[in-house]
Image (cartoon, rainbow over all chains, first blue to last red; front, side, top):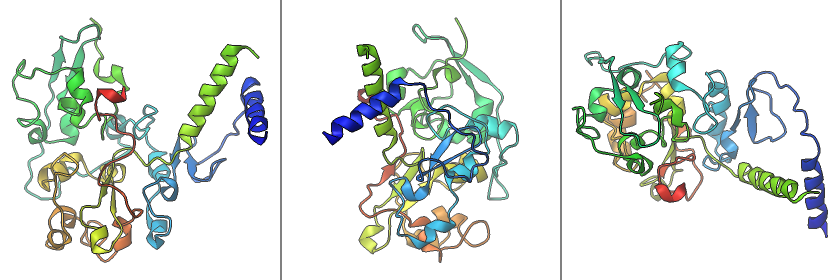
Length: 188
Length: 126
C-alpha cells in the first residue's frame, strides 16, 4: 500500500510541470543530493565519499580535491565522460598541463588532418593530429595502434566500440563514443 | 492519465534510480593487484585530476605507463626507486610516499580496472 502511495505521488509529480530548480552559485554549494556537488552552470559531480570507489572511512579523503571543484571551472563537454571539453580547456588556457618532466624530452606537435571517407552512411571523420599531439606523443599511437601510412589501417566502428584503434582512448578516458559529431564532423 | 504519460513517467523514474547509483568519475582506475593482499586500501587513480596538471604524454610516453588497464605491473618497490608514480610523487613535484591514504583510498574488495562508465566493453553494451 505504501509502495502504491509512493508510486502515485511520484507519478503525480511527474505529470505536473517540472519543478523550477533554484540557481546555485559556485561549485561549493551542496544541493538536494548531499552526495553531489553542482557547478554554476548546472553540471553535477559525485563527492568522492559517495562515488562507490573511495572509502568514506579513510581519514585522508578530506585532503583530496573533489571533481566538482576542479572540473566545474572548465569548459562544458557532453553529458557523459567528465562533462568537460578537454580540448577546449587546453586551447583556451583554462588548464596548462605540463608537457614533460624530463628536461631533454622533445615535444612533438604535428598539424595534419586526416580525412576518413569510408564511413558508410555517416559524415566523414576528420582526425586532427594537432589536438592529439598536444596531449600525446607520436609513439603513443604509432605504430602499435595505427600504422603511420594513409590507408594502411583497416578498421570500423565495431573495432572502436570494442576498445581498439580510437576506442583505446575514446570511450575510456578521452571523450566518449556518444559524441558522434566530434569525429564524424565533415558532411559528405 | 494517458498511457504515454505513464510510460514517460516510468522511464523517468527508472532514470532517476539509475542516476542514484554510485558512479565514480570517468576514467578512474582501480589498482588492487597487490594492495589489499598487502594490507592497504586499493589505489584509486583519477585521470581527471592528473590531466589538468600533466599531458597524457608525460605518463604514457616519458614514464612508460602502457595505455591499457592492467598492463602495468606496479609495485611500491619500483615507486620507491622513482619509477611509475614515484617519478613525480617525491615531495617535489607531487606529494610524497608517506601520504599513503591519498592514493590508497579505495573501498575494500574493489576489482582492478578502469571505472566510471567507460563504453568500450563491446557492442553488447549498445
